[in-house]
Amino acid sequence: MSVTLYQLDGCPFCEKVADRLDEVGVDYDSVWVDAMHSDRNEVKRVSGQRGVPVIVDEEKGITMSESENILDLIDRTYA
Image 1 (spheres, rainbow, N blue to C red):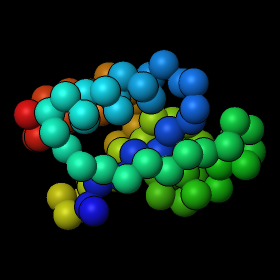
Image 2 (cartoon, rainbow, N blue to C red; image 1 turned 90 degrees about the horizontal axis):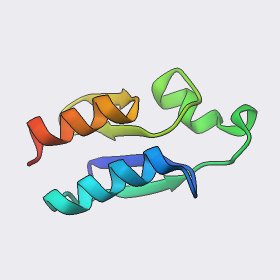
Image 3 (cartoon, rainbow, N blue to C red; image 1 turned 60 degrees about the vertical axis):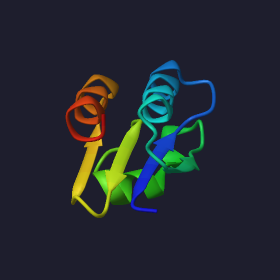
Image 4 (tube, one colour; image 1 turned 60 degrees about the horizontal axis):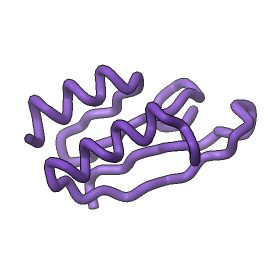
């Protein structure tokens, strides 16, 4: 799987991104992160920051945060 979504349970922005990926039929792996920002070391490692959602597409060489940017990416790239 080349697409990974880093998300937090109950995060409405994460849910929007996951829903859009499902709508356009993109298979992705979910990585559920800790609620504490200080414990989100894996997110920091891949994206340089600790906020979610973060999407990583290894095949396309894309790492992106901010839900609105990710939604635009999904519409332009996968839809």
